[in-house]
Image: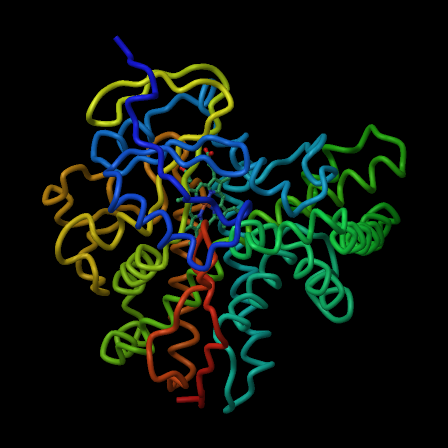
Length: 428
Ligand code: HEM
């Protein structure tokens, strides 16, 4: 029989960074875990959160049914702190419709061309902020893949980059401490950026309508989904579909690529092998850097009472609660040797020695179970292509003297670097 939640300890004085000032959000939950054990309640901002870290608790977490404990709703509640509601309402093509087999090959072809443009911008030698470089690369690849003709070049591209940098939904978990100001401004800057996106995408739609250019691929599918609507509804709807897809895609991939490059720059022997075309190693490096850089809060919004096994008993968690776990408290500490970067621990997409863990679900780069990332094969292929090309063309020298740190307040997604992460480069 499930028991009452009162058996779980409540972490007194612990709040989440959206609600109270917290210097290091992950450290705050880690402290609570050290004091209260593997399952405890955090009451923050008028909401109750059950955090769980035990092997059984984490397995129960990944097994939760979407109907009663929803990832979709939890994501929406997170992202709406930053993004205007219009981005979510009435979407016809969602980010989970992005990964049909032929889609992936077209995104990779766009990435190849985006890398050409990156190399042209970099020239033969200089220095660059690695994370700014990968972010710009991601914008270019993404916008070429789904924003319509002309949107990945010239002034249209620069306008969209400026708008999407304001409209970056990942701010909700990378800079949770900034969300009160976003709310106080009633998302004024974000709404203006959205109008700018709509303006640029609208011109791409008009070009396709006039027959001067072709609008195939994912953009073509988005346009087709709105075919029956009157012009203003249609243009705005297409632009909002593009906006949500681009915001969702920006979130993790290019930050993870940044860390893969950081780690490879710090391991020149591996970097040389990747540069020489060892794709299997490049993929294992991508997985390993992503594992180490994970700052994800994995959350499910409870919609109807669920019986949840924490490992020390089953409790009834009522609607309105959130059940969560935090990857940075598991990924590098669930077994003794996980604290350092070692791509050889991966065999294809799996940890080679997962049996050494109390549960294989305690460590992950792309998630477990029904909600695991549909973009994993694409993301690994993209990171493999980008690291191979950039390291093949450039000799990179780190401009940092200690391993870059994540943004301390960040609680979600792949870490963003707290500071500029400068690297010197020259062509090989
Ligand atoms: C290195 C890059 C990426 C990492 C590390 C990553 C990580 C993850 C993780 C850990 C989850 C599971 C979350 C959970 O269970 O709560 C997830 C789900 C998801 N990811 Fe990714 N992701 C990446 C790239 C992408 C990209 C590029 C896209 C899309 C453009 C994407 C779209 C999604 C979607 C739609 C889901 C939800 C699936 C579902 O609910 O069934 N991801 N991702």
